[in-house]
Length: 99
Image: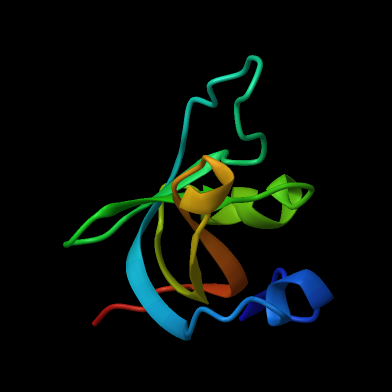
């Protein structure tokens, strides 16, 4: 298991429940421009949804997991009140072992 944001104050202070997601981590084309949300460099593709993944300053940590099936412990954060959407904040990530 690789820790990402689990110990940061801003992650821990969010009220959303922590859950575990399983899916494929893929790079995402970031839309850059005025009013765009930086740091959404990845998408987690699950059986139920495609989740934008917040990854500011952790691209080096997440890069080995791109294109792989992973388990992510994190929070699905709703930023709609701030004019954004939902994004997955990662506490920790690990490669999913199959078989």
